[in-house]
Length: 140
Image 1 (cartoon, rainbow, N blue to C red):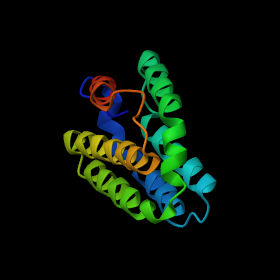
Image 2 (tube, rainbow, N blue to C red):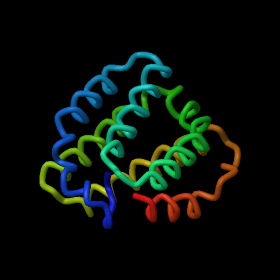
Image 3 (cartoon, rainbow, N blue to C red):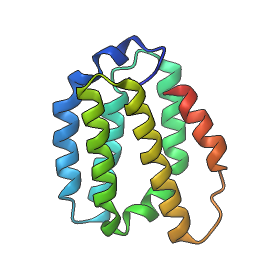
């Protein structure tokens, strides 16, 4: 859905009510599993309007690759308010039809989650963050 070359990016603002509803549920999550499920649902919905099958497959593969780090990150529900705020900023950008700002916000959100998991876990993330972010920017 988000993407410079995606025709569905023009319709991104149409997803705002549903993204806002999911994000509200995410903000109220009391367990790490519920938070993880809602975060995944939010990101899946964000990309759901893309007609680019290759893009969706690539995003899916990336999300599977970082799933274990998301589990570490979501285990500390004190970190969730920052993710909620970042999602809200992306939603606000979509309301304004500012796809470029929404993409930057999405990158910030993704980076925050990866860095939070990395710091919390104390181990080096197997996937180079810069390489993963570059790939993510190219596909969204």
